[in-house]
Structure formats: C-alpha cells, structure tokens
Image (cartoon, rainbow, N blue to C red; front, side, top):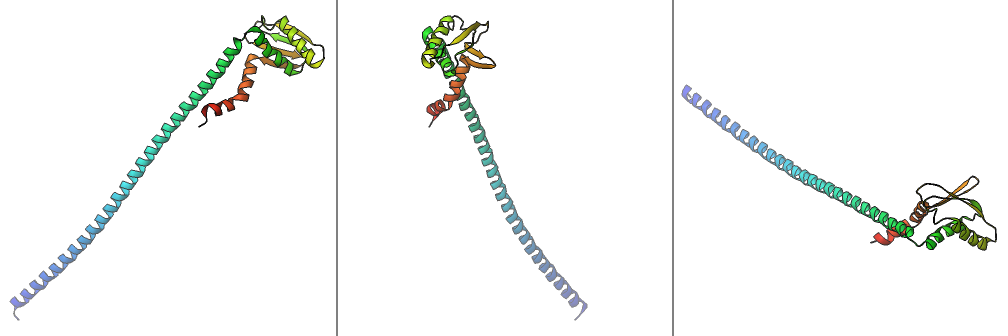
Length: 197
C-alpha cells in the first residue's frame, strides 16, 4: 500500500472518528436539552403552583381582613345599639312622673337595709326632698318595724339620685350607679336576645 492509500485510510479513519464524535456530541446535546426541558417544565410547574398558592394566601388575607373589618363594624354597631338602648332607658327614667321616680329610689333605699344616715342629693333636690325622706322612712318602718332617722343634705352638683352616708360607709345610689348595675346584670341577656342567630 502506497502513501496515497495510507493517507486515504487515515483520512477515512479521521472522518469516521469525527462522525462518531459528532454523533456522540449530538446525543449528549439531546440528553442535555431533554434534561433542561424537564427541569424547565418542573421549575415552571413549581412556579405556577407557588404563584397559585401565593394568590390563594393573598386572597385569604384579603378575606380575613374584610371579615375582621366587618366584625369590628358589627361589634361597633352592637356597642352603639346597646349604648343607645341604655341611654333611652336613662331618658325614660328621668322623664317618669315624680311619684314613680321617687319610688325607684325609695325601693333602692329599702334594699340597703339602713334606717339612719345622711342622704345627700344634688340635681334631684326638688324631687328627693323632705317628702321623699318621709315616704321612704314610712315604708322602711312598715317593713322593719324600726324607726328611721335620715338627715337630708343638698349639694350643688349635677348627678341624680342620692348617696347615703352612715359613719364610714357610703352607699352610691345615684342614677348612674343604678343604671350601671342594671347594665351589668342585663347586658349579656340583651345581647343574646338581640343578636342570637
């Protein structure tokens, strides 16, 4: 075999080797492209899932915020409604005829169980006056059989009702105290009745 034959054979072998390497590279490129495509699809799917989750979380936060605002508004409405209800009760009590208004405080004094002390009045000095002391004393004496000895003292203040002082004891029987006590006793029942579902 001559030099031309050897050269031709080397050239053919080199071309065959180049072709083999080219096929090998193309195969490797195809594998890399497939792996890349698989990874890209996986990342894209994860990104879509994450975006969907974030949208859902964002929507849920918006819903929760809206529910919280609605709950606060409802609570505020209930509170305002109760305040208005008790304000109406106060206005009703304050507008009672004198004898009915006095009866409220006569009964409150009777419940205290006291038969003596200083009854201090302010804004109600024209209603809770000497006549009130006599009526209250008569009812307490009739209930207990004990003689009453109440002293009336008038002060220039704006509260309604009275305060009974006996030695170191001070009973707050003002309209504010009576209504606050009534609210404390009745508010839960009223809430259940007005707002139960």
